[in-house]
Image (cartoon, rainbow, N blue to C red; front, side, top):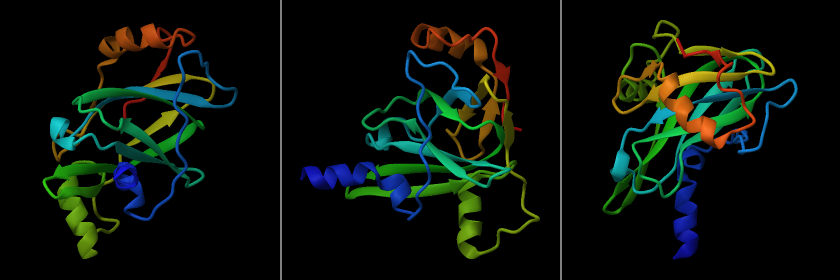
Length: 195
């Protein structure tokens, strides 16, 4: 029974047969690595308690290199509606790519991948992609830029509904993260809300 449960925990990304490099999470005594960046923000998940304790993940693509990175926005066995993320990554311009989530069902679970575009409901876009009707005329992607050697706030990423929203709640989140990451100067950070 344990091997089956453990294999389900990694279902969101591996179910789609893609392997992306995972971003390193900032530890409580970390500082910004030379030549790197740190991004932090808040994430509001779609499911809350009905997520069944499955993890949820996001992918971002470094525009200059084309590398797609993945990071967890909801930990395994957590059902909180909202959680923060804080990760190390290379500086540069990024696009927000996909949201991976698993919905608990009475018979197990269903894995979902939703592409993220501006002014488009993500579930509808997933159907368009499956039908092969996504093209260059479809809405553009959200972008943000991270500077080297800087901690950057990237906003609250609200995926609670189909229409994704990014907004600024920096003072509220800073009160929480200042207590955890004592070596990072949260009073002097960059702000890059995806637009």
